[in-house]
Image 1 (cartoon, rainbow, N blue to C red):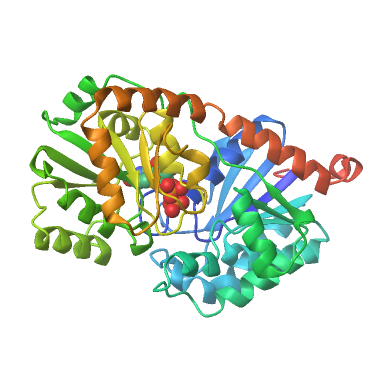
Image 2 (spheres, rainbow, N blue to C red):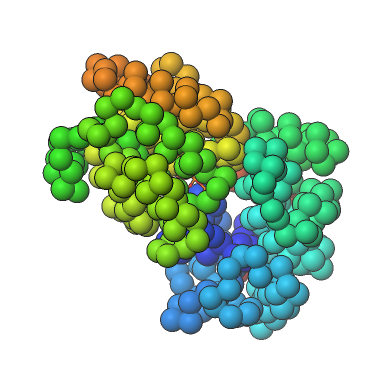
Amino acid sequence: MHIAFITVHGCPLRQAGSKDSGGMNIYILEMAKKLAARGVQVDVFTRHHDPLDPQIVMLAPGARLIHLPAGPPSLDKTGVYELLPQFTSQMRRFCISNRLRYDLVSTHYWLSGLVGMRLASEWGVPHSTSFHTMAEMKRRGHPEELEVEQRDSSELAISRSVESIVVWTDDERDAIVEYCGIGPEKICVIPPGVDLTRFRPMSQRQSKEHLGYGEEKNILFVGRLEPLKGLDNLFRAVASLENSSSVRLNVVGGDENSLEKTRLQALATRMKLNTSIRFIGQVTQEKLPVHYNAADVCVVPSHYESFGLAALEAAACGRPVIASSVGGLPAIVLDGTTGYLVPSRRADMMAERLCTLLKDDVLRSHMGIAARFHAETLSWDRSADSLLAWYRELVPEQVAAAMPAAGG
Ligand code: UDP
């Protein structure tokens, strides 16, 4: 089977934790590699965002990343909509000149869904999409959220035109059925996973030493810095802890000098939390396990979260997680067993749970063991097996067998 993944703004090799790069980029990279390991030929098409990148990068045997020029490399995702016709014709041209044909188009995020609608219909092949987030779901969690005006109507059009929608949770499936008015038959729920070898429990003492941390208790946040992530609430919760001077909040992720980072730093100053909060910046996947393992607890205070890979990575490292009970987080955090769920925006309840966990070494240890145990049920291999089985239902075997090899 030959699959074209389209991820116009989300290059899977881009460092996660910046404004436009997070869980979706990690997911695409893992799925491309895992599907290729199962004999699928995968080409991942994305926009050229760095002039130094070669046009074609091998991600793994059988999986290629193809950069296509469309607009200035530095453009962020808000400017990508206008460039979609250009990206579409670049992709069409690339496929014609390299004699590429695909059995299936798999798109990620609404911008790519629009490209997929066009090309899948021209090629007469099924189109499977994953929204990762939808404007409506984000607004439900965070009404202040402003979106490109074309997003809502595009998401409705994509959901109605595609043969398949892959979502990460039952909640997301139900929300799409209700909001888009489509039947559940074409929606498949496949949770993402975690690299259980990379993200594994290690010595907390050595991890803290490695990072140069002292005796203080460590709370960890990992993710892109944006208002939807609810860091303001986490700051409030930390500020209200009785022993806040012996606690550090380590914030991993965010672009240097971004407006949001500057806003959060100013907020920390106003709340007199300068000495309690460390803004660490972006950390590579390879170096993240030591940050999780140095932590006593990881907090995911989001107003909305389609899944929450950071929560799963923390759990895989054997760390208890306190998370908002929104989106996919209840599938990762088992309330009272692997951590705690709290209603979003309830800084008081978050503080209460932080207090309970930070003062009880035994509870943290028990919850950490249970968290790892639960994370072991969510591997990338399992996701890839389910995804491939679903794709096989969409692509009849004789069609897949008849196709000439991609990349030939
Ligand atoms: N991440 C990273 N480095 C950073 C910050 C985040 O590699 O400095 C990764 C993190 O490990 C996780 C992803 O970015 O895999 C964030 O995914 P999540 O689902 O938590 O949030 P999203 O970005 O999808 O909103």
